[in-house]
Length: 176
Image 1 (cartoon, rainbow, N blue to C red):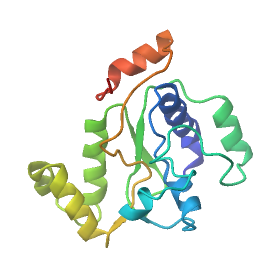
Image 2: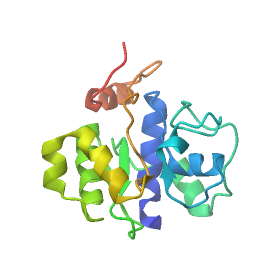
Image 3: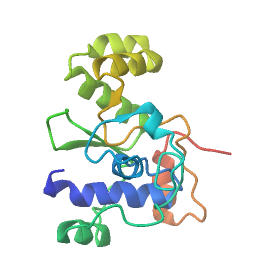
Image 4: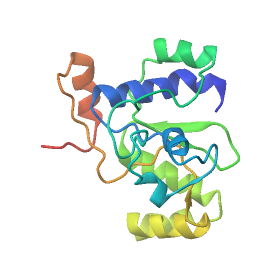
């Protein structure tokens, strides 16, 4: 991760926690399935570990690493943004793009996948199912994004503050 993005990534996680959205953080799953810094499979994302933030909402039960000073500072002072999603720009790039809606996030995932040799136009016209199949084919069944929105993603604040309500208005999905 690019150090200049730490406050943005911190903001994504704080925003998701405020809205009771799953964190969907790949490093927590990598820790759970002992695949440090490796691409995850779809099966990894459904593992029942309490550290799997795709399956369990909120923070994992304990730390997954020793954070550096920059990460701690970012956690204490996140950027004042409404982002809810981020994805690596490409498999080789340590920088990310940030989004406030799942639709915008999915377009950016498609672009990142296209940078790995999959046609963005074919994905855009074929829809989400084709995207998943093409991504699976292009990456050998591995997911290369740092945040992947699953169909269960939702915005559901327990006791919304004015800032939370503003974030909630930008959230595309809600659970009754």
